[in-house]
Length: 212
Image 1 (tube, helix red, strand yellow):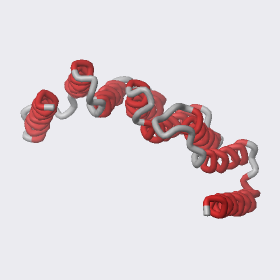
Image 2 (tube, one colour):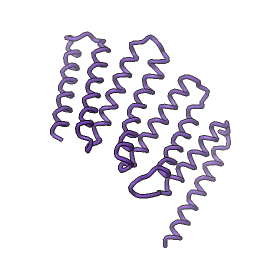
Image 3 (cartoon, helix red, strand yellow):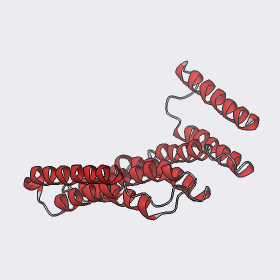
Image 4 (cartoon, helix red, strand yellow):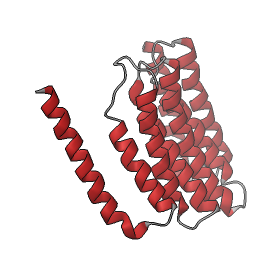
């Protein structure tokens, strides 16, 4: 833990000094390559910390986040609206989501909760890519379907608590909503919400009565 704190502290100090130098006009105002280097090296430093001490998974989060941030800044060097406004933010969120999926996989399911932020971030990444490239409002449907898959994976994938049934409820609700949007059934959303709420409430009451 001492080594991780030293590495993190040094990275923060270096970043703070660079910010101060730039604010005082001692560095050019636009130095994307500098920030790409700083964020990239910082990310790989955290990943190196994890590789040297695999008992602690937390460095994966700042590690992948900083690498994604380096890619985000680096893509601003290209004069392309698609890269700067669509691909760059999608990659950034995707790398953060990748950190949580790595946490789940590398801990062999012990940290099963990481599936949720990992799936959510991947779903938002899909939303950005679909809306930014295809448009047409299909991104929201893709995001809802991705969230449904996320909760479905919580039910299917192994975890220390055994098979959990509660993820099936949000998975089913999100699946119906995603399919409704994908099929253009937006006008029927009020009916679908009411039906799903009634079914969900009935299921919870039934479980409570059975366990009594």
